[in-house]
Length: 205
Image (cartoon, rainbow, N blue to C red):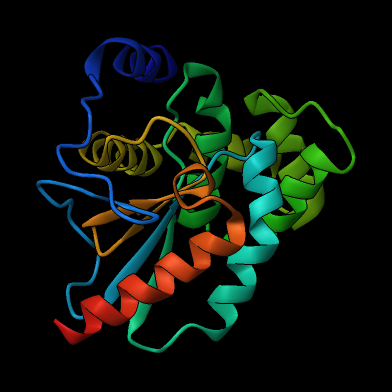
C-alpha cells in the first residue's frame, strides 16, 4: 500500500511551477528560497537520480569539489523521484541513509548500473545487491525501503524539488536561493565555478 500511495503522491500530489526569478550568468535565483538543513552553514545541495547518465558523469566533478570544500559549506544530496519509475532508486538511497551505509552504498550502486549495465529497477533486485555488497539481510534493506523514515525523506525531497522548480537532474542548489546545472551554466566545470562564486557571496552576506 505504501508504494501505491507514494506513486499516487508523485503522479497527482505535486505540481511543479516555474522558478519565479530572473536568469543570471550561470544560475537562476529561487523565490522564495527553500529551506536548508543547517542555517549556520552555506548549503550546496545536489538533486540526482541513480539511473541518470548525466548524474553519473557529474559525480567525479562534484566529488572532487566536495573533498576540498570549505568547512563552512555543508554538502548534501537529495534523490527526489521526479518520475514514478525513479521511486525504487530514491527509496534505495534513503534506505542507505537510514541504515547509515550511504558511503558504502552510493558509488558501488551507481557503478553497478552504469558501468556493469545491471538492471536494478525494483526493490527485490536492489535489496539483493545491497545484501551482497553490505553483508546485511536483503529483507532488512527492502523493509527499510518501505519504512516510514524513508517515506519522510522522499516527501521532503519532493517538497524541496517542487519549491526550487526542479524538473531535471543533476541540478544544484546553493543555500536554497540559487539553482545551477550543466545546461544553465554551460558545462560541469562551469557549474563548479558558479557554486564557488555563490558560496563566497553567501558566506559574506
